[in-house]
Amino acid sequence: QSGAFGGGCMSGGGNDIQWCFSQVKGAVDDDVAEADIISTVEFNHSGELLATGDKGGRVVIFQQEQENKIQSHSRGEYNVYSTFQSHEPEFDYLKSLEIEEKINKIRWLPQKNAAQFLLSTNDKTIKLWKISERDKRPEGYNLKEEDGRYRDPTTVTTLRVPVFRPMDLMVEASPRRIFANAHTYHINSISINSDYETYLSADDLRINLWHLEITDRSFNIVDIKPANMEELTEVITAAEFHPNSCNTFVYSSSKGTIRLCDMRASALCDRHSKLFEEPEDPSNRSFFSEIISSISDVKFSHSGRYMMTRDYLSVKIWDLNMENRPVETYQVHEYLRSKLCSLYENDCIFDKFECCWNGSDSVVMTGSYNNFFRMFDRNTKRDITLEASRENNKPRTVLKPRKVCASGKRKKDEISVDSLDFNKKILHTAWHPKENIIAVATTNNLYIFQDKVN
Amino acid sequence: MGWRPHPQSAKIRVKDTQEKEGILPERAEEAKLKAKYPSLGQKPGGSDFLMKRLQKGQKYFDSGDYNMAKAKMKNKQLPSAGPDKSLVTGDHIPTPQDLPQRKSSLVTSKLAGSVMDRMETYASGQVE
Image (cartoon, rainbow over all chains, first blue to last red; front, side, top):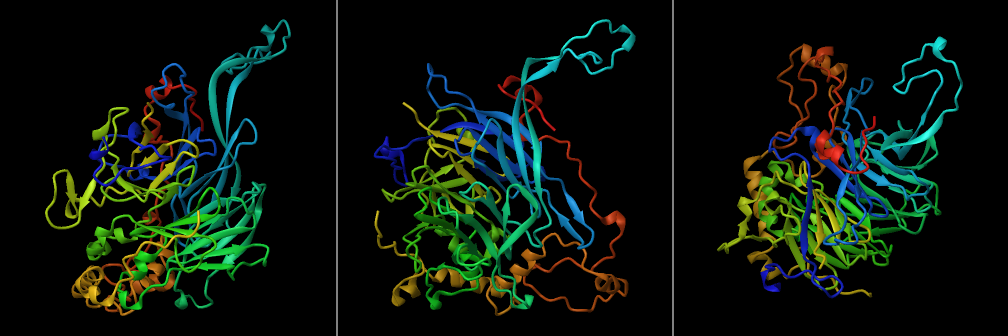
């Protein structure tokens, strides 16, 4: 079986992981409406819930059904739990600015009670949503019929006490807080602090700190706006709080640097505590160097010891104790280096790919083009390329590894670089916090894959 | 876990082999781009796109643009930002009709499936 894996076998915990198709959500048709473009995917802390946001400002939440202990061929399926319109398009007349309703990020709060909470954000406004279940309703009102119509008072001859009776489960989403008017530029990240009371929001030039209970005030903690905008050389591309240290956060830039800041040092964290940057050989510099070095995503490992960054061609793992270079570098699609001219012309060079860790921090995953996505095992140093496609539609079908032929003679089953579909991008992926279940978003479909359970 | 030497990245190579492989693709691509768009500035690709990124969503600039369009100053040179990356401002006079209409938000996401799908799944319920 291991011979079938062209690019090398995956190994997790000593056993080969075989990824299988589980489910796909979304429309089959090729004509994709803009609103249906998926813009973010996120598991909650237990992995029971999976949220997606799209360009139309809508959030869809899937819930994993309880495992059937008798037939445990696979882990529970994800079914629709709740869906709501999170953000609406707006027009700022004062600044003549169109504000898209596209959901840039969703982040879940850890569960504290029966309800679930998440933060969702578009370019300008962050909202705290409460998702709660209702399975009872009051019945037996004196003045109203069950359908809500008012009864004729003259027909009321006795009084009764309304009681709660069970009803079909209903899931309700309501906006509990709206955090608005704090960002002049476009929000790219939100991150909840490990204190579970505060969170940060980052735009191109500034990062703000909020308290989840307070909407009319936010503290600016990073401001990289130059006095003279003509001197602007870099922007903030992503930011995240450390998973354990509530005083620590990082932010990445369009120049490929990551700054770690400690909020105990000063109120305004413009001066970093650590600066992570890989030295570049100046003789290698080209027109494209800065663009492809721009970091599109930064994610701490669950342990908090490492962080991962994604730039256009690679994924890098950094040890927080070492600033001068990453400890690991994985090439995602190095064959694109000889296509940079056309990728610049069709704007693909500006695509922002995200990346994610598995629950044990042993494997990292990121997307690519042609609906391919890549996984890198940090222990075995092996990697695999898989494809999210409806052709592998049968549940529990093991996915066949893919290989791209960079140049020269193309082998059977390989795909040449020129045949890649650059419109089929996988920008957003998520890994279940505990299990080997992954959610992979193509343009308008959500794929769920699981490892083969024997 | 410990530190381990990082694998050789594409950027760090011995100078001799540099000429033969590796870095050459990127430089070749740069040459291709500059051949197509000679006006591309000397500054590294990035600065122009930063400004474009910050101005995303900007529909109309200000009354200066309005007046420019009114006077039909077509001969004014817009700052060149490379292959068709110029910002679309000031080239026409905005009217209320041009402003984007508030889109209908009543369409449910296709990820949520059809109504029939939802009725069959457990724990489903539609909310505002």
